[in-house]
Image 1: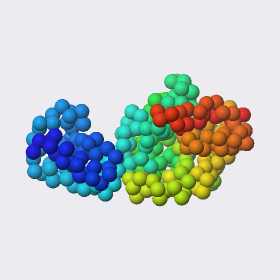
Image 2: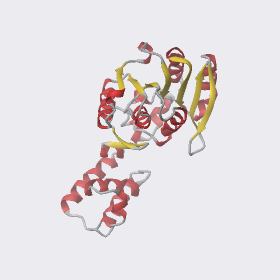
Image 3: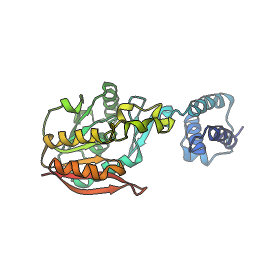
Image 4: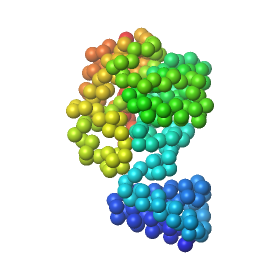
Length: 280
C-alpha cells in the first residue's frame, strides 16, 4: 500500500472520531514512522510502506482516535524556532503564545543584558526561546509543578542554555527572590467551569493547573500582576498572555498595581492575546 492510500484510510478513521485535522494529523504521524519530514512525505506519496511500518502507524492512529494530542504522540512540539519536549505534565505550547516572544525581542537589544523572570514556565518554551535569541540575558523560571520544572530543565539542557536559567519549584505566592528587568507569564485564564467544555485533546490530556483561572478566569493573572509589582524594578516590563474577553478586567488590575499599559497585541484571529505594561 502506498503512502497516499495509507493517509486517506487513516484520515477517514480520524474524521469519524471528529478529529479536527484528520489529514494533517495522519501525514504528521506517518512522517514520524517513516522518519522523514512531512514535506518529503508529500513529495513521495507513491512510496510503498511495509507491513511493520503500517502496524506501527496504525498504533499511532489508535492513540489519536482517543484524542491524545499529536504533540504527546510525537513527544515534542515546535515553538518559535525550536522543538520542545512535552508530556501530560505541561501545557502544549500554542502558536499564539509566540506573541510574547515577539514583543520581548523588540524591547531587548541584541547585546542587552536583562534579568528575566518566567512565571509558570511549564515546558520552558518562553524563557528558553528568548534566551536563545538574547545571548547576554539570563533568567529565572518558576512553576508550581515539580514535574514541569524537571521537563523545563531538560529542554534547557538540550538547547545548551541551562547555565543561564535558574529553575525554581515554587508557588508565586511564596516566591520572593530578586529584582527583575522583565517578567513574562502565560497564566491560566480559563474559567474553571468551562474546562469541562474544552476539546477532549485538552481537558483529558493537559494539566488542569495550567488551565484553571478560577471562577472568574483571571484570579491567577491577578496574582501574577500583584507579585510582579513587587519583583520588577521601576520601569521594568511585564508581558502577559491574556484571554480576549478579559482585557478590560486585566487593564484595571494593572492600573491598580501601578502599571502603565504600553500596548495590547492581537493574534492572527484578531483576538486580544498579549499585553505589554511598565511598572511606574
